[in-house]
Length: 210
Length: 318
Image (cartoon, rainbow over all chains, first blue to last red; front, side, top):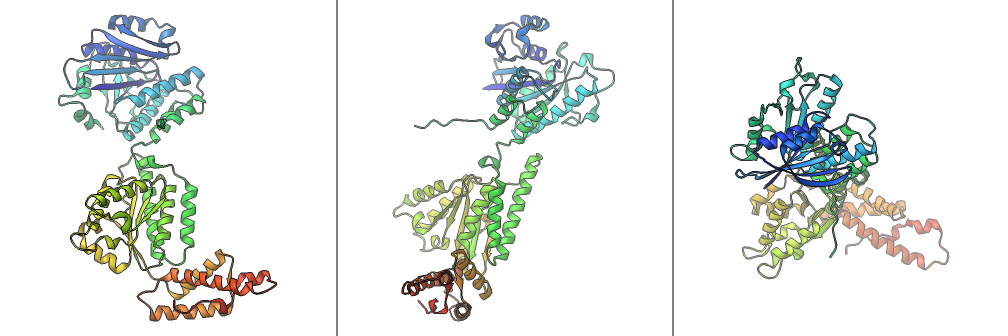
């Protein structure tokens, strides 16, 4: 069984690092990747270390690329998990041509996904960004409910979280329930793994979340 | 072999993005609004069709009860669709119906309008009416009935399957194949719950007996509409309307004669009175007789072509 997880988020929400580190946490030594971007398609196998290095040094290849990392699991019900690291969602009225292409790629990934994760940057305290994040989050929650896809709000960068707590008056979808993680330290990964894969199988657990 | 092109439901949203008409939030909202798992998939809402059908229904003479029920159904569907839009739980809309009424009370006409109404509201994809009777459903040997009935259901998918004189399926004792047809119909109702609407129509007395024969059947039809007989005034209205539609007019004498005839018919021939159908038959016969009268004349005025005189009316018993 293949399990597609779409990872969405605002720019700099920590999508790529989350995908790489979480895949590594799940036990992946090598990541098969498939990327679709402005420069065409690419595929190959990469180690998490190299992937992280590439991420730190963003070349033209890294911008606006939809990457899918696949992880093969030896045991467990879904034995192949693909994380789709999507292009970031831009808060703009008028999108440029390149941004439109990115948005379309992201939405396609969203449609193909079995599970939708929305990453929220806990380190951020800019009200405009938070407002946009809340708007997006509500829309995504509505979308996944009407399409019967499990949806999870994930707070990233727990280790650098801002001193004033998240302004929940921005009305996030889940009434303030989120899984907080830190991709750098690995905090919250076990809980997320349990939520995604479960003890009794995936869907029995994730359905509680809806 | 034809190649069916598959367009995911969101393809037009993506096209809009490509043209730059939608921002990020708007795009996500547009995606979320599409509910591929609901009834809406069967067809897009078309306000005009629905409004036109409702308008035509309201033009029908009498049938107050029917109009009220249809109004109710329409409101219910609309509210369910609105609830769906707000991501609220909504009950499945079961629209299978039983029409009870004497001959000529408008059962088929209303069914045809309902098909268009439901299509306009996005409940049915086609909205066509497949009219069948016992002979179309019941086969000649074992197994034939199921096959024939299934075929009719298949034809009616996306529209309305209208079984006229449905009580005749319950007749004929234990060995009759009519029962098999009922079973297949019931199964079809469950299998294609969102795809088609089954309407069983028949005369009131017979339909009530039929419902008693199959106790499970009547509970599967939440909507039961009674078509009452028309009174004389309504029949006169129908006659005038039918004549006007065909660009004819009754002379005052003809009107009086027709009314007198209808009163007599209502009074003496209560059981076999065929309501609007009787009016239509009288009108059509009268038109032919008027034509015969006029064909003998050398010069015919416009007024004469329009008017039906009392001498033209065919009111004697057939």
